[in-house]
Structure formats: structure tokens, C-alpha cells
Amino acid sequence: MPRIVVDVMPKPEILDPQGKAIVGALPRLGFTSFSSVRQGKRFELTVDGEVTEDILAQAREAAETLLSNPVIEDVVNVEVVEA
Amino acid sequence: MTELPLIGEAVAVAAEPRLAGAKIGVVTFPGTLDDRDASRAVRLAGGTPVELWHGDSDLGDVDAVILPGGFSYGDYLRAGAIARFAPLMSKIIDAANSDAKLPVLGICNGFQLLTESHLLPGSMIKNDHLKFICRDQVLRVENNSTYWTGDYAAGQEITVPLKNQDGQYIADEKTLDALEAEGRVVFRYVGFNPNGSRRDIAGISNAAGNVVGLMPHPEHAVEVGFGPESLDGIGGSDTEGLGLFTSVLNKIVGAN
Image (cartoon, rainbow over all chains, first blue to last red; front, top):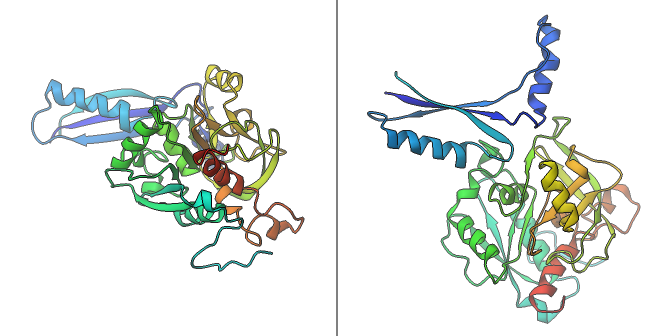
């Protein structure tokens, strides 16, 4: 089954409290090379059958309306992944 | 001290028969916590609460709507993001934007719902300190001309409980400047900013003033013996949340 992958990230100008907490924890494990972490979301939408242009357009619309909040997040990637 | 049963039928503190005809719908979503408290606050304020279910397809004859606090859909995806597309929400959005200007109050998760619905600008993200916080919070009433704040004095300070995880109000600078210029910052945190909200904003309104959202919980400060005063013992602040509910009732019956 093909899947449509949607990646959503907090907008660059928005402070990401979760990413900030993670970057604080990394050095405690010895990972000292990372100066910043931003945490986003990955959605996998499974399609029964072929991914048509129409279905891909629907996925893009769903990404902008439900999967992300345009006030605080950007949809950074929508792509088809064949199983 | 007013004698009221803790469980059961609440009786209005200052029963005014003319307010009792005003019906305020309180919407329950899967994961809502504070619908019963909001209904009780409406009754204590003298109005008639009406239970509404998120899956309902019409609002009936309610004069106003409260979106109560809680964790609709477990805060999955984003707080309020899934509940925002409930069948009843589209009716509420249309009615709030209509000429009739249905009064809508969103408390906590209800505030998050209002921003996800774009009835109010901005959004809420995780508290800057990343922890759930529960405290008695002082707020300043910055605008007493909204449908929900007419019974307060401008600049009045009130104490109500605050409890949230995703309470950090954010918007871009242009939006924040516009909110300030148009007097749409309705409540501001005083003394302590509990979640990192921009410009200490605790609550805002739409341009018409019929839609108000705030993060703290006025419905938990409506009854003597069960509000902030019962914790700090200083006195006088147990029922300072009641004004939001009396304000809208007075607005509905034409007194405000």
C-alpha cells in the first residue's frame, strides 16, 4: 500500500519548548555536538490503491486544515512513499 | 455564607427572575472535564444551563454558548484541533459570526478550540516551563465592554483558578499590536505570568466582543467556600469568576 507522508514543523519564529527540553537533555548523555533541537510531527496516510493527483491534493488540503495549525506550524513536506 | 448543596440542584445566589429565562448552552466533547462546573456557574449566576453534545446538529434556542475546559480528544494532534471539526462547532462558528452575534465563551480547552476555529486569533502552545500548572491566579479585567465582562469595573483585579499544560498564548507581533490597539486583550495575568504567554495575555475577544476566550477558570470561582479564598484564607475572592456569567445574562436580557 502506498503511503503519503506529511511532515509538520513548528514555525521558525516560534519557540519550541519541547525541543528546548530535549537539547538540554542531550549533553547529559554525552551528546555535546548539538546546539539546537526542534521537534515536529510526521503523519503517514495510507491509501488503498494508486495515489492519484486528486488524492495527493486532498492530502495537501488535509495537511493545511487539520494536520497543522498555520498560525504556529508549517507543512514542510508532502510526499508519496511506495510500500 | 450562602447555604447550597454541593451536589444536586444549585440555586442562584442572587436569584433574579428576569435572568432565569436566559438559556446558556454548555457543550460536552469527548474528554471535556468542566462542563458540570460551567453549568453550575450559569445556574448560580441566575441563568438556565442547557446541556449540548458535540455531535448535535443544532443549537436549539440557546442565547449563548460556553465551550468548557478539559482535554477534548485527549489533546491529540493539538489541543482542540479535532473537537474544532465537531458538527456542533460549525453551527457555533456560523452563529458567532452572524448578525445575531451569538455570545460564546471558551475556557481553557474551550479557548484553544476558539483559536483552532479561527474565531479568535493566535494559538496556544506548551507552557514555557513545560509543566502542568495549577494555582490561584490574579487577572486584570482590561476590557469591560465585551458581552462577558460588562459586570466588572475596567481595571478590576480578580482571582480565579488556573490549570493548564498548553497555556502559552502566542501570536505574531502584528496580531498582538492589533489586539492591544483594538482593546481586545480582555484579561491579563497580574504579578506572575504562569505560562510564558505573550504580553501576559490571559484572555482575548473578537472584534464584536461577543466571543471571548481565556485560559484560567472563572467557573471554579463562583461559590463561597469553594473558590480561591478557601485555600489562602485571605478572603473576598471566592466568587470573583461569577461576573463573566452574570455579565452575559444581563447582556441577554438587555440590562448591560
